[in-house]
Amino acid sequence: MGGPTITTHDAVPASERDVVDAGLDAFNDAAAPLHEVTPLACFARDDDGTVVGGAIGRTWGPAAEIQQLWVSEVHRGRGLGTALVRAFEARAAHRGCRSCYLETLSFQAPRFYESLGYRVAFELRALPYGIVRCTMLKELGTDPRERPEA
Image (cartoon, rainbow, N blue to C red; front, side):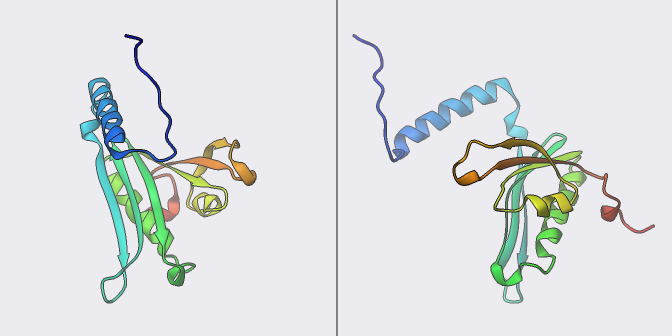
C-alpha cells in the first residue's frame, strides 16, 4: 500500500468538495465557536418588490463582515449603496459589533468605502492586470455622520 494519491481537477467535483468542506467545518468547529456566526442581510426593493440592491454578510462577536454589496445599474449614484451599508452597520452595531470589515477589488469600490469611513488595512498586489484586492476596516460608531441628531 503506497498511501494516498493526489489528483488535480480543472472543475471541482461536488462530492469531493463536500468532503473537504465537512472536514474543514469539523476542524474549525472544534477550534472556535463558529456556530455563533450569524448571517446579516439588507435589501433594497423597488415599488413592485423587486430587489434592486443588497448588502450580505455576517457577524461574529464584536466583528461584522460585508461579503457582498450590489446595487442595480439604474439605481447607482443615488445613495442606495450608502444606505445599504449604513443599515448593515447599524444592525451589526445593534448586535454588539464594534468593527466591520470587507474585501473589495481596486476596480470595484475602495473609494466608495473610504468615503464611508473604511480604511485599507491590507492590499494584495499579486493579482493580474494590476488589480489589487483591498481588505478594508471600519470601527463602528466613530463617524459623526452616522450618529442620530441630538
